[in-house]
Length: 223
Image (cartoon, rainbow, N blue to C red; front, top):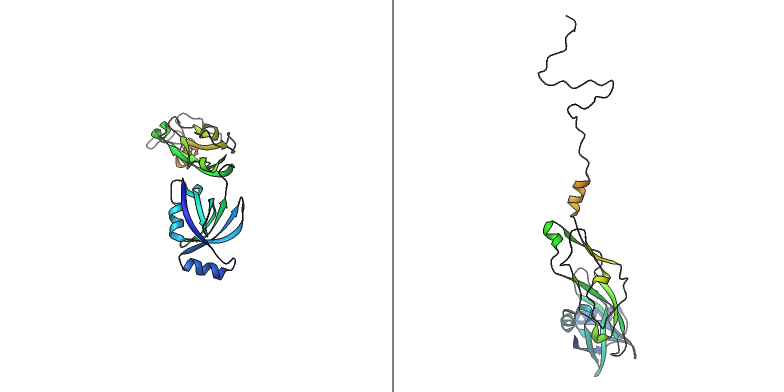
């Protein structure tokens, strides 16, 4: 997926300048990478929001137009205010269509595991996979099909559905997810039941044997 995004050059540096930009509805950023000099830029916050909220997420391919010149870029180092959720800064990495790049692609779970029907839950170990491919071949997600997973089964990187034009760099033996018994049940199963006196069980030497309620007292006592 490729979108168009307009940007303008801006004065470089200074927190005060950055605050003014954000107050006017623009987000400061930097354009850098293949074939370009590092250039401070600014983009409209609404346009940036729409560009980053497609199915491709942060791996969206953008035609960034700066002062009339278009650059093929990927958004990187996207910074947001953790309280307000506003965009604070974004880098744009210039790439070439004929040169492979390395990116992180999110894992998307599909299907329903048979193990979940008997009480199992999905335990995630890996949310993203590192891949290498041409910019135009970057997948939005990589599917993890759990349709055949029974309770106790797992899915590794080597089991994922990888597009032909994509090379996986993450270790293929690394565990992506597993269908496991819920934690609360595992804890209950590990608990040891309290010891009980079993009828007919030997009584340790020196200890008095339990007397059943209502049983007659032993004969031979005084009086």
